[in-house]
Image 1 (tube, one colour):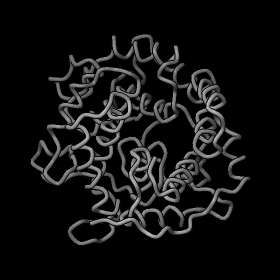
Image 2 (cartoon, rainbow, N blue to C red; image 1 turned 120 degrees about the vertical axis):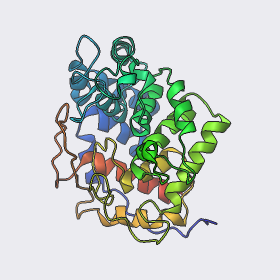
Image 3 (cartoon, rainbow, N blue to C red; image 1 turned 135 degrees about the horizontal axis):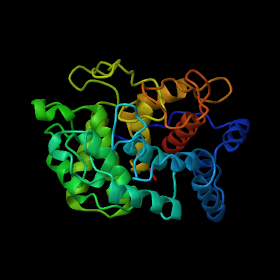
Length: 330
């Protein structure tokens, strides 16, 4: 049974780092104000509203085609499709109630289908009906719920696809009975959005808790059977100890910790190694690097280069460390 742990000392952010984070895009700035500086709610809301009209958020919205698509597809391997842009807009914190969000998402709801993007039987599916792979449906479910769309069909499907070990795997249809960290994190984020925005249901909560335990039992990056560190993902070859943004469908330790923080999980000894890993990656200036960029075409460039200090990874790391230090969940 997991127990609460004596707190490790984690570094406090330097004032120079906070200033550097605030000297950035509105999508970062409003989250720093909310999560790190404790700015008044009305100031946070005003800054968040700028995501729709300035910077990366506005540039992404401007790329939408008249038919509602980005990249000419519901989903593609180039990571510049409708699904990928909506995931990025969710990460940026575009206010779902804004006129810009409602207009863009309405075009997707009314005009985008899965034609040519998945199995033929899904060609006629509206975008928010999803397709068949749980990793993709998890992402569609997460953005659909965040932007106020009806994705109950996706949620019901995901609940039915949970594997005996508590997680999910896109290879289950090919007979796999072992879950995938990549697929599981995508589904968990969707189920958490459901609880945060729609409300608790016994079925969703139970499935999410089981999936959450799948990660925690493995200390976020170890094999349950042997306890050895999983050095890299079998499917993509990516290292879970290297932090990327955006993550797309890929799992890494920082993404796992961010999920736990958002879910309000009380940290226990099972996250200690993962926290140590995050702390170890803090550079001499108190920042974290962009350690990986996954293959594909970014819809818009975000002024972050691999191997250079990353505002996104620094923001995410600092709020995970705050969550750990508080020891209470959110």
